[in-house]
Image 1: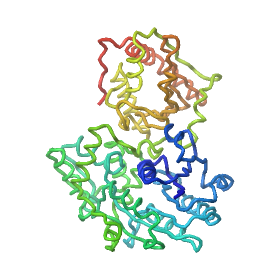
Image 2: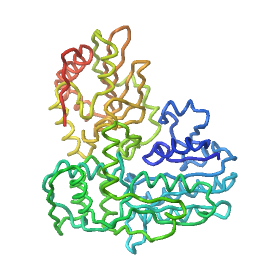
Image 3: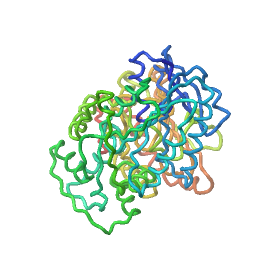
Image 4: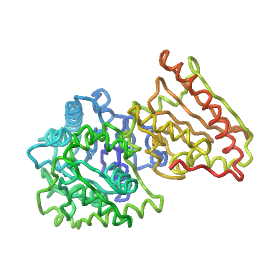
Length: 483
């Protein structure tokens, strides 16, 4: 079949794409920025990439008419806008309007379980989108899931942060809220097996795991899998705002996402039973099995997607990241350094391993301080880390940077800063004629930006000198760990 796939660079879409390709389908991938699609997919004859922003009707004509099915995986849980419900609704209506003029027969949507009377703003919006997508021109298959458990998922990474960092937790009362966690492998099975299944046309199903658990039980069972002893004390006096700050400072989540999660975590997420497992021959695995499988993927360095890489953890940079490839030359401050490279393959491998658990090779305590200060200022801090310890791709999150360009053959890596700054910043590594060129560029915003640059200049002198020396002359140079 010829399938329109949205949310291609998101957590679910990135994992669904290879499954659909393996099944022999042709994909039309709708993205706001084609540069965020992995290069090997751009070269695949079974993939057509079209640039579409569903909030901009003028771009919808890029969707071909001869599609037979479509996945609606557009999500804005990290949107800090006060009118994100209206934006989600408009996005769904524009999608529906365009698809009604195509040959599409089935639209598959993944939303959230919304059976409680007092829904959070986020779950209410998901329910509204499901209703808006329904049409007389095509059939809809709507799946509603709760907590999704898998390597790289936001819920998994937040629970991991809490369990691995805090032997004793003083936690909010919403830890007693009940939910039914579902493994990512099962979510993908529902999405892929429902394609073209006429029995599921114009039907809505809740999909969930075999256990009803509280968030506290999820934390404790996660600890058991990791062979850790953890103690949790819940207190009734922690307000939603304090709860959000608690998640924000302890975990790698953004403050906006923390607020939305806390808002939703107070709502029980219990699914309505149906015959969907029988229809699709799916047997959801337990929570502990899902956690165990997730860590197997982590240990094999085979995490296909992470919430951190999908701009859900982004600062101001939300889309069109390729626009930042052209680093400005005028009105900027620059810190330029170069060194002769002793071993190009080794230097490249160290550049591509920078950040995360490896660290930044020099002055790690200063990088740590900068990360803590960023968190205090409402930024993302260093905890975001990186998805893969050895590979980098355009769009990946890298501590408080975003990868704007990564090409080992061209020996160039360009990062854009997502920490809180009175301006914009880039960090570039490039090897030419056996010379490593390292350039930090800062475009200040007003007087505050200029004062900031001069205040950090002494630290840059220390950090950037040491870093380029470790990269260019890596023999006997052991990286410092920032974790």
